[in-house]
Length: 186
Image (cartoon, rainbow, N blue to C red; front, side, top):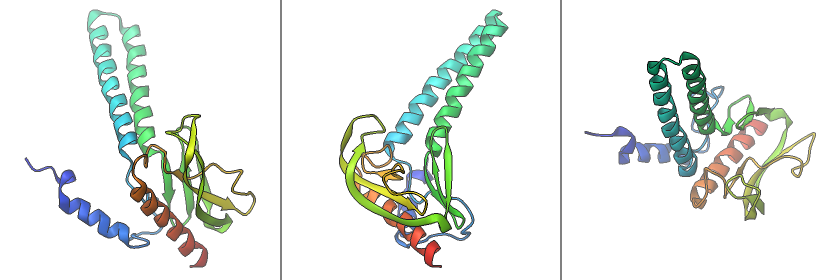
């Protein structure tokens, strides 16, 4: 059975599109200029696996007669599914309107008019979002009303998307920098 999402043709098509600076048809459509990394996808898959067991438990509890307990377990299972999907949506998104940093609970959008620069710097970064820091690269956003030190980095080499994938980080950082350059000068 062919799996189109695993074929070399699709990867080749994605890389061909990713090589151009701004691969878009509709500049007003929000898009992530990189693929989610294996750590992010793997973590979300484990959460979805856990959710399937919780939802199956809710069905079994409902069949045994305790509807109120089944409802609580069902809500817990659905919350796990929503959390896993939100984890997959986290990251940097760009469009003609601005740059959007989507976190787990909070999304912030900065219009291109307020962006002074987007650049890659060498600095201590958090390892997989944990408190431990290591030396790495970060893509930082400098806004006209703040300095780069006040704003958390957009992307890092040791985040869920780019840990162990420095080429992917460079490609994503270049894509975001190209969007910023075109939107500021275009």
